Amino acid sequence: MALRPVQVNIKALDDEAVGRFWAEALDWGVSSEGPGVTNVEPGGGFVWPDPVAVCIDVVAVPEPRTATKNRVHLDLATTSAAHQAELVARLQALGATP
Image 1 (cartoon, one colour):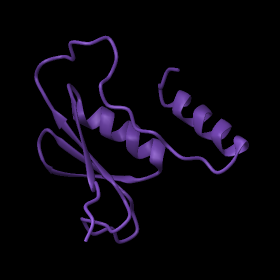
Image 2 (tube, helix red, strand yellow):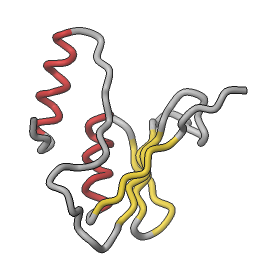
Image 3 (cartoon, one colour):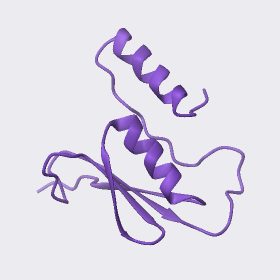
Image 4 (tube, helix red, strand yellow):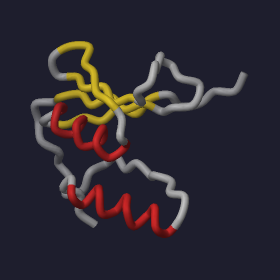
């Protein structure tokens, strides 16, 4: 059986805000296993580890990032130029910057 990624872990000062952003961006839901952890996962009967989805865990850390850019980038697939334009507009409405 081949290995495959099942989860991305992001560190953030505000795990809830970052988790809400990605949940809105992906049209997924959020849950939490405790304070300081926001889980972003697909809805509709999701059970971890899902055979297809790669989930996102956002974990709170006390120190701000030290680089000017985030160190985690998620690439999203689109189905057409129109879908890409809609996705970019939705992400920008959520606060993403180019």
